[in-house]
Amino acid sequence: MKTIVITGASSGIGKASAKFFAAKGWNVAATMRHPESERELSELPNVKCYELDVTDSATITSAYDTILGDFGKVDALFNNAGYCLFGPLELSDEEQIRNAYDTLIIGLTLVTKKFIPHMRKNRDGVIISTSSVGGLLTLPLTSTYHEAKYAVEGLMEGLSYELYPFNVYCKLVEPGGIQTDFWNRSLVMADGIDESDYGKQAAGYLNQMAQPVSDSRASADDVAAVVYEAVTDGEKKWRYTVACDDFIAFRRSMNDEEWIAHIGQMYSGFGV
Image (cartoon, rainbow, N blue to C red; front, top):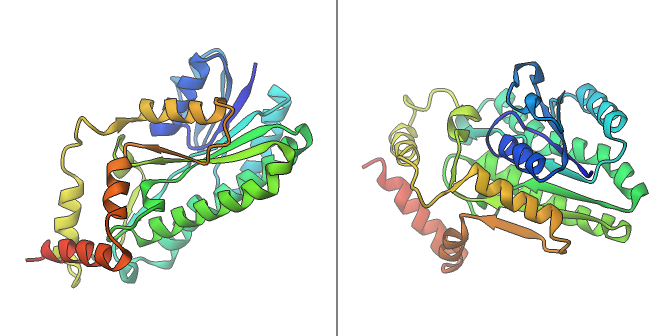
């Protein structure tokens, strides 16, 4: 029986992926900051929950050692822990910025680094990271989120070359509009937006983003199915997009200057 390690498995895409892989007969090491609070996953026969905070190196090492002790071999790693800082960079404090980077870039990098020797020695493995349509194009008021996702894309591409000789493959899953509670669960707001010069545009933009989710958007289960495909299809495919193809095509219909003007004018209009 094969084994996958999933970070950020307490909710959303991570939890859906844990359940999906378990249903397919995989062992699942579902990691999260507070495993003692997880009931649903802990009741599944081939799922074990572990404490792992990607911003805490000690928990990364402890989880790694315990997982290998329990399962012996890890076949796939799914980096999925999330964080989104919303607001103008000017109003984002240093702690918020560092938390974003610690979760989305540094933590992901350290978790990946921890599992590389195991996969390299086995000459086998797949490393999947959740990127986003936000790693392919940018929108207002989430500059640090886009920065992090672009960094993840660069890391995974560079790492794919390093690990290619060892039959360890790196892949990206890039969701677009997803029906999860990500905005409520992982969104962190910069302080003082309403009273600032950014207030009107930010309020209008956030209201637009908070509109009821269209039925055409993918669910967390849909993304989990794509993660499973990426892990098991045996292909050297690099990107797996979910519910964002139309958005990407729209972006590619414009050059950089046209896109910046289009989004800038739209965003400015929220303050009228």
